[in-house]
Image 1: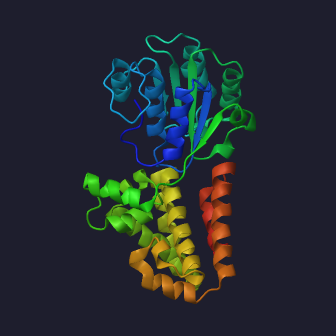
Image 2: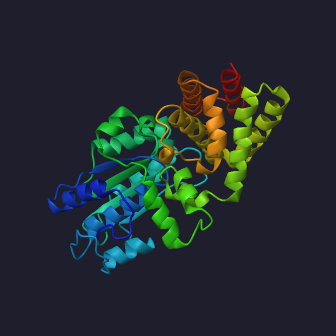
Image 3: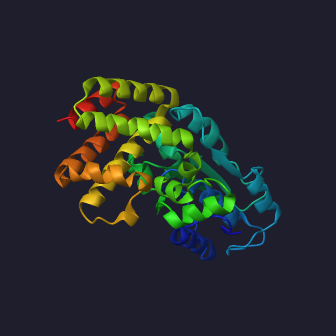
Amino acid sequence: MGFPQIIGHEPQKEFLRNSVRKNRISHAYLFSGPEGVGKKLVAIGFAKLINCAEGKTKDLNCECPSCAKTEKGLNPDVLVFGYPGEKTIKVDHVRQDIERLIHLAPYENPYKVFIIDGAQRMNFNAQNAFLKTLEEPPPRSVIILITTLADLLMPTIRSRCQSVVFQPLETGQVRGFLEKEGVAQNDPELVSKISGGSISRALATDEDYLRKRTEYLDCLMAVDAKKPLTLFRSVERMQKEIKSGGTEELKTVFDILSTWLRDSVILKTSGKKEEIVNTDLIKQLSEYSEKRDVSELLGKFAALEETMARISENNANVELSLENLFLRLSR
């Protein structure tokens, strides 16, 4: 069983196939890359591959008991831990779910596979506990860590894992998926570009997302128009959305603002409109970029990245960070 229905990532899939063909399966893998591009699907596909009773390494559907159970989430030797709703993965999670089970022999397959989704959420104590397992891996066990931010994991953890880096999907691949599944029928081209190569983001791009895009870009426009009252009200609405939506909404804010600035830089430099994401706002983009030089646009982009890093890596106060961000953008 290979990866018959997984879009893109051909080099990564071929690397994993070869590791099975040559019997060079590592005890631990680190799947890193943007959110929603298919890392978890590939991890589950790899779990099928290494335990396939028919030994298939090509992209063929397999109905052997092991592959069928893994597909349905019923394989006792393929365990997926995501801890939805938990802000952090704590040491108790690692001890109860990983350490307790990993030393047990596989029940009915060659390997016992542990998939940890969102591994960057492991706190310091959890990572220390997990490191001990990596240092003395039991035989016939494979651990797959999935992360969007590999740098948040200890270097000693990263160095003990086989790294598999995933890239955003191509716009055409996302558009093809949307058209095949019959979603985003109004404008699959626009949605596929806004997605940034992420299927999950493409599926989440609906009328509500487009409304938020207008609101969040209004903040940016209010900064440049020197309208403090409008800016205050816009930022206040933004903060309410973030309080309601949490980390995912914060990512949406930064995705929208950074994509706008990226589009502006493209128009200002190469002028290649085929690389623009916000194709439906090309007139507004042109007006925005014409009034600014490249260094100013890059400075705004850098301020965005620094603020996002401060919030995600240092747990900085979100409200204060946003207020400071828009103060910097207004200079």
